[in-house]
Amino acid sequence: MRLSQRVQSLKPSSTIAVTTRARQLRAEGVDVLSFAAGEPDFDTPERIKKAAKAALDSGMTKYTPIPGDPETRGVIARKLTEENRIPGLTPEHVVISSGGKQSLYLIFQALLDPAGGPGEDPPEVLIPTPAWVSYGPQAELAGARVVEIRSDAESGFRIRPEQLRAAITPRSRILILNSPSNPCGTMYSPDEIRALAAVVEEAARTTAPDLVVVTDEMYEKIVYGGIDHFSFGSIPAVAERTITVNGLSKAYAMTGWRIGYAAGSGEFGLRLAKALSKLQGQMTTCIASFFLPAIRVALTECADEVEMMRRAFAARAELMHGMIGTMPGLVCPKPTGAFYVFPDISAHFGKTSAGDRPIASAADFAQALLDEHHIAAVPGEDFLGCGPRCVRFSFACSEEQIEAGMKRVGEFVAGLG
Ligand code: GLU
Image 1 (spheres, rainbow, N blue to C red):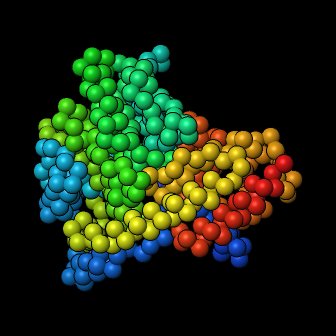
Image 2 (cartoon, helix red, strand yellow):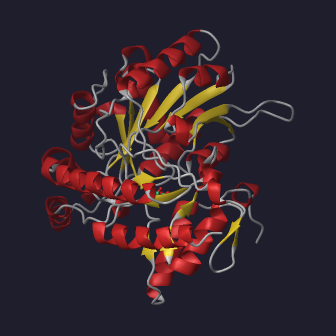
């Protein structure tokens, strides 16, 4: 078989790869403690499951309209209007897809053309890094060139407006924002988002008229550091060039259901929804029909369950950050959202582990930690930027696991010499 260049040059998802490896080792009987998976350890709230079961039992087993039924799109439009303060949304502005990943994939495919021919420059996708592992590969699949805007642990993993201004060119087509951030666990304050929006607005009037902002707000409900979640799309001056992407995976502990959605305001959002629907109609048609009532229940009836999980993540963040803070050489801003810490471990490069493994990279650090202490974490290489100096630990697991696991990490770090 001859594989396409597209697939041959595509990087596999490292978050999924490490999670799968940890699961395999556990199945083989190895006492692995996994801090790899970006998925809540909680089960989906019972009332959400009940809604899906009832829908199945009532015979809701057929195709639905491509972007979802009007009722469910309406619930999402209302949520985005009332909670996120995004203007100009109706049910027609919303497209429901199989996970935030599919929403993003459709957006890149809908907005980007590869370079027209040799010598022509490709469109540019601006990604503040470190960033989640799938943005870059998805943008490249659509023919774009990734332009990184780099931040580091010292700056709280946040880019500054002047960095954004300097990165924008006439070829800039998409800026990706992700607050709270996977993998960094940090957030932009409302004022910082307003400052970035002012740069986008000015650039759109001058250098980059086609610039669109894709804001991935998958972790909006998991915030605990005193910073309010604030939606970029709520700012009127940029609303009609902003696509808000979200989903049910993290807030409602529904990773395996694969439910994501995207929406933009006004005329811009209507054109976008039509384009995404056209693509989805040739790909997956629609999501599983009996999930639709479950989405409505999640978004309208599960505030208590979401709050319970948020509090648990807040306590775990405190515990995790406190324990990492006692380990020499690990530099890590305090998480304020999502369920990750992303310590810079580069102070240990050049050392050797107690088991005699040389540590020259984040990948070496993570591999030695797995081999010698049976702790799974995602090395930061694929998160780009300063990622290669960092390792991601997810704290979507019990406090007991955090205590036992971080003790092992502490022993590993103490053994480096
Ligand atoms: N988003 C989660 C993570 O970063 C799930 C895996 C994935 O889709 O990358 O671990």
